[in-house]
Length: 318
Image (cartoon, rainbow, N blue to C red):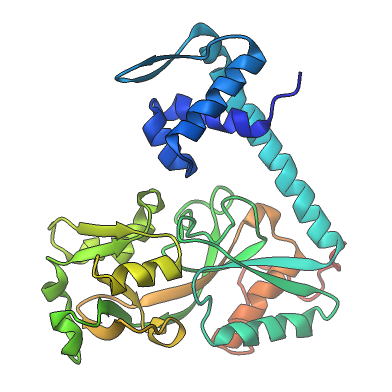
């Protein structure tokens, strides 16, 4: 009997969340659709996996047995899938580059051109990630290297456990406001005047990255009002234009994400935004290191190179 891995993922979500409502939100599916999938899995296995009640979904004995093994099975499958895709990309001489929003701004094209100069037989394939993954796809193993906005999850961990990050650029943080907002006419907005405003935020699971863009460190303990949660620039812009909240943004957003109904103003009293290049040290081959060097050469000057990267004598990528 073959069980669709999607059914197993749905099962694991319900088992971990304890309720259909929270699991459906996590999976971005409707609750009726999730209920149907759980029933389908129970039919395939010939047993009940949950006891349903008003308080949630409790695992049965059979459900606990499956819950003990399913996450490991899915993790092994994900690992195998990522390794296969990475090997296929290397065979095609494609470097998968993740990025968030406007990547490294106007420097992005120069970085790609410098990487191509260093590896003319390779191609950099740009892949935009949602704000639900501030690592730009590295955490999921979908990319080889990423242009990210700091702080990047994992950058404070030891190199063998987390991500390596090299800072490239900084730029001021501005505020994006509805065009009708009372502060929209200001030339500069002091951050204390935004403390009582609702903010458009990244998903809660992004942790420190979300906190940074809500400027929680600059609030002196005052709670944040969240007016909307978004993962993509278009949804973010719509939420601001519709008056659901304001949002801190890099100054470059005024160039890359101009939209009627949204205005950008400089903000005082918050530190600047930082752009970095990130990679997983345990899977960084010569092509990744050359991309990092290209980033540093463009953003810091031709003499810059990542300190711990091997030198020009590296063997070619196979």
